[in-house]
Image (cartoon, rainbow, N blue to C red; front, side, top):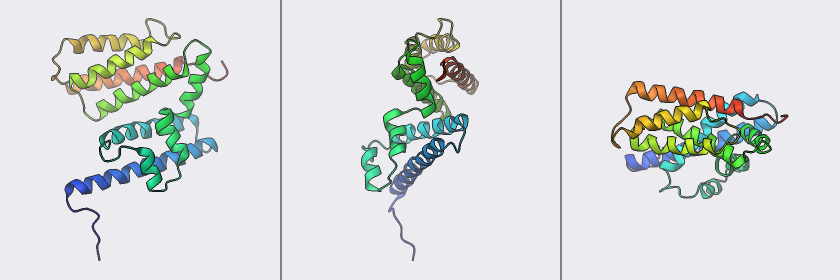
Amino acid sequence: MEVKLWNDKREREMYENFAELYAIIKATEKLEKAYVRDIISSSDYETECQKLIAHFKTLSSNLKDTVPSIERFHDTYKMDCSAAMNRLITSGVPATVEHRAAASASSGSSAAIVAECVANFITAMDTLKLNMVAVDQVFPLLSDLLGSLNKMSILPPDFEGKTKMKEWIGRLAKMGAADELTEQQSRQLQFDLDSSYNSFMAALPTDGT
């Protein structure tokens, strides 16, 4: 006998989102343990962790009305994923980024600012991947990103990320709020964000420097 968990399409979508949220938390927990046990390389860990964090932020934002507390969701379903909760909620960035942030603190940039920059990069890139390309959706994200990059004392004035974001902000400022980026513009912005993010990560000192 088949038992339905939902009565209509809306309920079905809700339960599917619950399942996805559950899967993201569980996957993050396994990834954290794999990294701690040195089963996965730092680069692979960072790439996969960034994806999970981005998906988590997007999904939790969409579920804020039905799941106002991720902690309560975690406890209700007895998930036992403390490492994942720390990574997704408390930290918001991969452990490798935290390590670089700690190293950069001695160079004049606090770990909090580094984490803020990473979070803003990820949010902007994830927004474009979700095809959210209206000016009033993209402009504030790029403004926040540029603002956080400007707080980084170790970055030179002509740092790629700063100059690229200034160019895009100037371009968007001439458009209407409801205007949307073309497919070509969206791809170029995504490319510029990816390139700037890689340059940003390369500019951070390593643990030993």
